Image 1 (cartoon, rainbow, N blue to C red):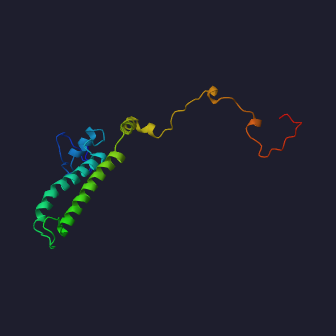
Image 2: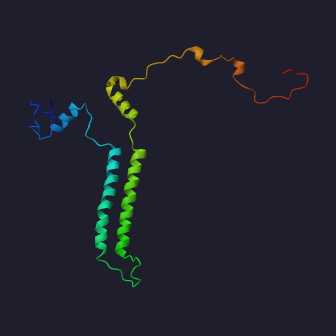
Length: 174
């Protein structure tokens, strides 16, 4: 194997770095072993689901925090003691929780609807990788269609219809 950075020859399979330039060989070796694909890469679908779930968990964690901190900001109004009263902190906390929850749910639905990878697309990508490079630039093979599949042949007179037709008299049959 040769270093992709400086083209120095690497003799040992256990070598993690190039002895000349210090380039990391381990990552290149992993890509070569996996035939040029990175199986560890997370799809957009999984990223979207994870991000949506993280936002929902953040809202769940922040809910008791805002409830506890809300006690430090008593209301200024002198209403009836049993009526609910809200402060600016309660309003801000509820707005943050609402936005986090709504954004998390929207992100999960977006991933489920638009970013799901269809199994056929994965199979197509795998089949394209299996095609040799010199065949990738070639035209598809010719296909023959039997003449009997086309139906009845038309004569030149049947290929066009006249634009203007004259009025027929009672003596004409057609």
